[in-house]
Image (cartoon, rainbow, N blue to C red; front, side, top):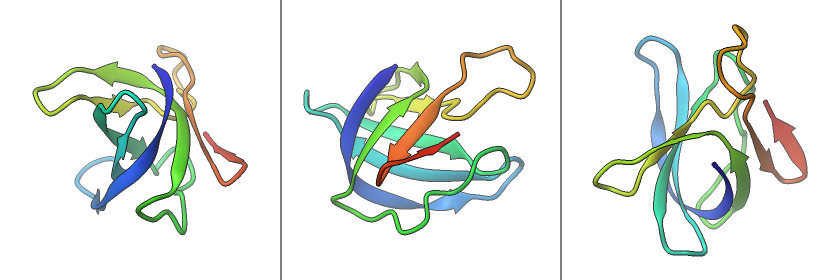
Length: 93
């Protein structure tokens, strides 16, 4: 899924197992998506705050809350399409 959205909520990093930076974005269509960005593989988005715009490419999985986007980084094993997040003119992969 390639899309963009406005950050509406910053969640604490998930530090159990692989570490993930987590935040919720609202897309133009009104869909709210949890972005689950692996910070053991890709750099963390420092300074990210509510109201910031992000663009992203990752694997989308539907859930009752709207969905989750993960694999927003390069896949070291080459089994998934490489994803990314663009924030403040920088690509995080």
